[in-house]
Each structure stands twice: as C-alpha cells, then as structure tokens.
Image (cartoon, rainbow, N blue to C red; front, side):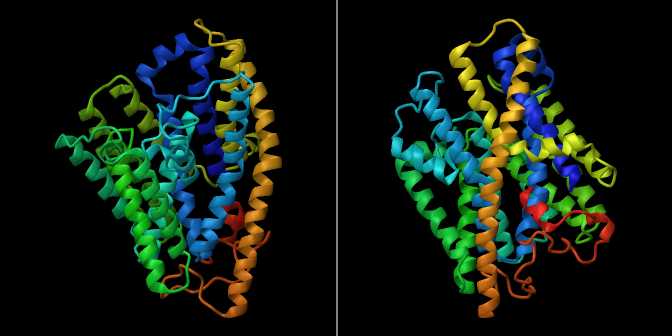
Length: 442
C-alpha cells in the first residue's frame, strides 16, 4: 500500500500550499487559482484514496461494529486535540476562530461531534473540517450497501451518482445553500441528524439482522439527504465527491479481481465526463472558476491513475513517511496558520522564505502529533476491536453487521500485527511486508 501513502503525501502538501498561500504567497495564488484549483486537486486525491481503502477495511473485518471503532479512534483523537488547540489559542488572543454567525453554541458543538457540521448549516471551526463531513457520509453509505449486500456494485453507484450530478446541472436543479437548515432551522436539523446518526450506527452495530439492516439503511438515507439538500457546495459537486469515492472503490475491486477492469475503466470515463460536464455547465462564481476546477479534477484523477500504475515500483521512503503523517499534516496546518495570522499577519506580497519556513515548522509538529496522538489512538482502537472480536469468537456468534452468506473472519484477522493478507487469492508478492492493519491505518 505504499503507493497510497505516496498519494496522500502529495495531496497533503498541495492542500497545505493552498491554505498557506493566503498568508505568504497571495500574489502567486491569485494567478494560479484561475488555472489550477489546488484545494480541489488535493481533496479529490484524498477522496479517491478513501474510496479505495475504506470499504476494504470494512469488508476485511466483516463487522460494522469494529469498523466504526476503527474509524472513531482513527479520526477523533487528533480531531479533538486540534479543536482544543485552536480554541486555546483563541482564548490567549493569538488566533482567531471563524464567526459562528449567531448560531447556538450547543448546536455547533453537536454538529462538529457528528462530523456533519458542513452538511448541517453550521460554520466549520476550521475550514478543512468540511471534507470530514463528506467522509462521514461515505462511511454511512458504505455500511448501508454492505448491510444489504450491494457493496460489490461500486462502479454502478459511481456512475449513478455522477449521472445524477450531470442531470441536476442540466436541469438547473440548484437548491439554495443549506436548504434544509433554512427550511426547518439549524438547531432542529442538528438534533434530528445527531439522533438519527446515533440510532443508525447503534442499530447497524447490533446483533439482530433486521435491526442491522434498518440502522444501516437509515444512516445511508441520512447521508444522501444531507449531501443533496443541505451542502454548502453546489449539489452537483457534492454528488461528484461521493461518485469519486465510489470510483476509488471500483478501482479497488478491479485490482483485487472482484470486478473486471473494463467495467471500472468504463465507470471512470463516465464519472470524469459527468464531472467535467457538470463543472463546465455550472460555469463560474465568486468562489469557483470553471477552468481551475476542471484542471484540478483531471489532474487528481490522473495522479491516482499514475499511482495505481506504479504501485509495484519502489516508493521513496520520505514520500511514504509523508503519507503516514498526512492526516496530522492536514489537521495541524490550519492551527499553525491561525496562530501565524494572529501574530505576524498575512503578507500582501509573495514571501517564499516564510512559505518554506512554514513547512519546516509544520512537518516536525505533525510527526509529533502522529506519534503521540494518532498512534496511541489507533492502538486503543485496535485493542478494543480485538477484544470485541475475541468475545464474538468465544460466543460463536456471527459478527455484527455480517450479511448472510459471508464467512466470519478469524478473531484476530486484520487486528494483530501480522494477520495475513487482504485477499487470499492475491499473490504474496503484492503484500510483502504489509499486513491488513496497514490498510486500516490508511
């Protein structure tokens, strides 16, 4: 999986440049954005990688319960540390946080805890957190499809979502920003979404099959409704984001011989055509340039394709290491930028020295947060999941969330340090030196 680390490392560097250029490279940024939207490039690469790896993590476990444990302990420890750090910096007067626009503090907090704040009409504490809302929507959809045994149809769902995006633009079906929040109110919507999400995850992780399916489908419906009816990006782009994730899953299935490459390539062609067509039809806006978005999207898909083609080549260690700490890089850099903006301010003229200096500070800090926050959090999650798997093995029950017809995994599969391979029909050479745990951590 080294090629995925390399892609994440590249994407993280580009996203950091996109945000840090506001402070240190404003002149260059204004010219670049017209031709190449660096932010969209980075996040589309991240979404393709997530689409490739997240369903693999769920299906390898065969357990929705341990899947959610893995996601919670992968995301929340650093998320909580970053939120605490920026709030502390704000209290000391060395960083400013975004204005919540008079929204209820309790509603904003609950929305952030669900990770759905971007899709619930509440401002993000940090701008980069908006992508986690779409990650969470994808998790819920993946669990729903897994529970009703449609998870193998990744290419079909990628094409369907992309086609819906294109149709919505062609028909002029453009809902206002946060349309549901405007209709029912932010506080009621946050409450409904939080309760629904908790019920969906709880039921999907339960033992009774009917309850599992009901909870999973409920979560999937919540994700689709929020993405299509309450996003702050245009509806077509929200659908394209989900389509891109499922395209990543389709590539995983073809690479693992669960699907034909012809089908995946065809799906990729449709997704790219619909995405580019939607962006072109949508035109421009205050925060959107047609040319810049299309170039960024095409380059992101090309980058993922190149990484896939070179997946069996040796990857430089420094790039693998950068990918390993990419979540820390992604989450920590806006905190450092907030402190920088609150102390030395933003520069009107380009200052390459300060831009480079920012990376020199960011990367060591990210190494520390990875080592002392991310790594312990993942270890706690694995221990808890291992305990649950052991209890399931001892009781002889089928894993929570395991659809009928699936073979339950061994109690230690995918959880111990050396647990075997992702797929038994894949050659040992493909996975030499890598355990399924590496895939989970990705």
